[in-house]
Amino acid sequence: MIVKSLELKDYRNYSNLNMLFSGGTNILYGENAQGKTNILEAIYLCGTTKSHRGSKDKEIVMFHEEEAHVRIVLEKNQIPHRIDLHLKKNKAKGVAIDGIPIKRQGELFGMLNLVFFSPEDLYIIKNGPGERRRFLDLELCQLDKIYLNYLTNYNKVLMQRNNLLKQISFNRNLLDTLYVWDDKLIEYGNKIIETRHEFIIKLNSLVGEIHKRLTGGKEELILQYEPSVKPQDFEGKLKKSLERDLSLKMTNVGPHRDDLSFLIDKIDIRKYGSQGQQRTAALSCKLAEIDLVKSVIKENPILLLDDVLSELDRQRQNHLLNSIGDIQTIITCTGLEEFINHRFEFNQIFHVVEGTVTCNNQL
Ligand code: ATP
Ligand code: MG
Image (cartoon, rainbow, N blue to C red; front, side):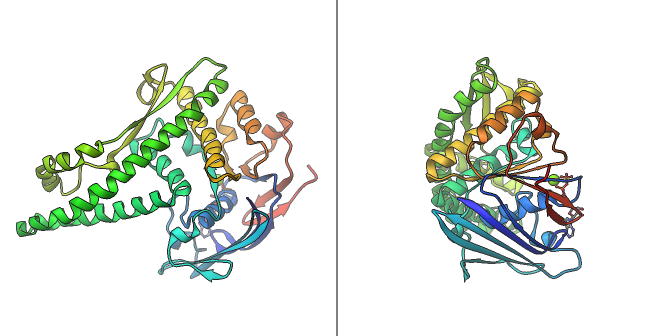
């Protein structure tokens, strides 16, 4: 699958942009705050309807404008498709595939598969469990439509249950209605736990070899899923936690409290790893993700690399660039030295300056 073109109107700092991509490696370079990440964000938005930075639509629409438009033309199995997004400041966004509006995000599933790699991803191991769950969910939602459904439903139920817990603190009679949400929480939650468990098994089968290669055979990396609760214990633990839930006015048991541990030679590197170890393990996970997406969707995903090279040392840069292979890649950076030093071949270079993009292949 490849992205052929991108059009933006009143999107962040782009009033009008129209660019054509190569099916190989595309480099977007420019100084800070010029609009490089904004372009990757727009592509990501077309694949997932969400910003990778978690921005709201009203933040994405250009200052002083009311709406923004994004259009992507992509090619999938040699057939062209068009995705249109219409973002509004105070209303839900409109999404259309090949000119036909869609009603649910799930309908976009599988149209545009992306692997997004940003400097923050290098910190998934060091940061809190929320980041690690996000890493799990972002990939799973792209690979598994049913998981996306479970997660959406789970989050809705969790919100309703938490709201009810707040109301019960004023009106104890409402306690009798809590079981309605408990049953649903357990039903969707167990599906999430099972799917995450299987995903980690698959990821482990790929990440070990990659990490060995990255560390010259010195380290063995194993990922371990740490569910907050096992499916068979969910009901019991939820009941046990009732008084705590009521006093804290939130749900304390369930997959929204899961974590993921990273073991190198049996040592938990979340706590004991060096910075370099943590980053390398994160890089191994991302590289494994590319392979995993390839094997599940039986097609190449599009790789979006947001300024990650400058965060890596020379050896790791080399590994990353060498593992890109034949998939369409869009890389942002502030300078071109790394690519020149590595004699890395690129197909298209774009210079980004204050919300304008010029094609610059003479370098
Ligand atoms: P860096 O190298 O620092 O990562 P970048 O080129 O990736 O920079 P972006 O994050 O793509 O930069 O763009 C940042 C620019 O976009 C900033 O100048 C910011 O003011 C502008 N910007 C962000 N949101 C909006 C908006 N809604 N309207 C207009 N401009 C915006
Ligand atoms: Mg940026």
